[in-house]
Image (cartoon, rainbow, N blue to C red; front, side):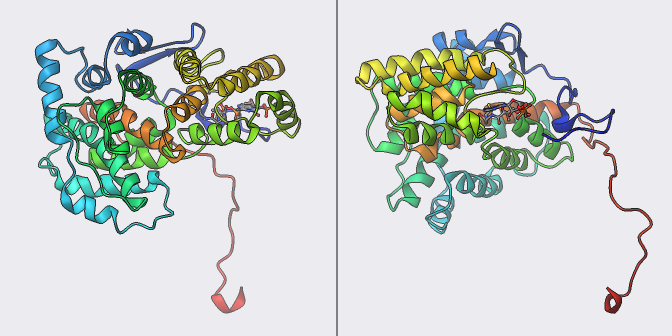
Length: 378
Ligand SMILES: CC(C)(COP(=O)(O)OP(=O)(O)OC[C@H]1O[C@@H](n2cnc3c(N)ncnc32)[C@H](O)[C@@H]1OP(=O)(O)O)[C@@H](O)C(=O)NCCC(=O)NCCS
């Protein structure tokens, strides 16, 4: 990164307070992440993604009656309009599923019965519909773009189980569903990250919540943000064998390469989500008798820590956990969308509940007093 000559400017807005939130909190020193005050490890271990989504959207944990109603609403809202399914068939087959998601959510806005409503309750209802449709959109887009028929959601299944069912056409075992569910909880929300902030900027103009979600998806796609989980798996596949790992990482660092799935703006020690998922990723490897990804990961983690004091973030263990579960690599970032829809919607609602246009200032560093020249004199 080049030297910053401006004392009042923080490149990348590092350390700048971008707003006030009640949704989630990161404590870097203790590697802790809480959603509405509750530790994410507890939510991932003991709760379900549905409880997490409810917590983020409504602000409190549901009781059994509220959770059961919420699950019914999720089931009722999970199917896609036929028009959206047909429209997904028009997309170029080489398009990344993240681009298909931007398109699908743009269309879904027009099918929402609260399309024009902007009050708090309407925004919560829209947030719920956005979350409910996440697994269906991702699975349908992937299947259609791969020349297969979309599979309708099963109203009896949880969000995690339904996604795996609609993706593969058969119900997943309990362990696979539990891992998927926990990963959705861990991916659901993360304070003022780039996509949540972008989502807030969008709705702060009094644009609608779907526009905020589309902004969020576009922002998440990049490899410095959500796209890192796909790039991390491509890197692990390139390394291929634990015996290659040490030489590979040392050579990459010597070439000043960015190692995908490592580093974080907010955590200077371990990413709290990565601590949880590393344990799970290694457990899946042992259950499946395929421990090599965990072994390669351990070498990379050791060298990154000793050489750079940089630790894995959530995207690193998520990559090999999803790989071991048989998820196609181009769906790793879209799965992040299934989860993060709940966090983005919570941010959009919070922003709109107490809105002020977000419009920072900047330092002008360009030419001054340039003389206008008619076109034939340029
Ligand atoms: C997440 C990330 C964008 C945070 O960026 P940031 O706070 O702006 O920090 P920077 O990119 O400026 O990095 C600061 C220093 O650490 C180094 N660094 C940070 N992440 C690194 C990584 N993954 N691999 C190698 N070096 C890294 C940078 O090269 C830089 O070193 P320098 O000061 O010698 O130039 C960054 O760590 C990164 O690019 N990680 C890889 C992508 C990724 O996994 N993203 C998902 C995040 S959840």
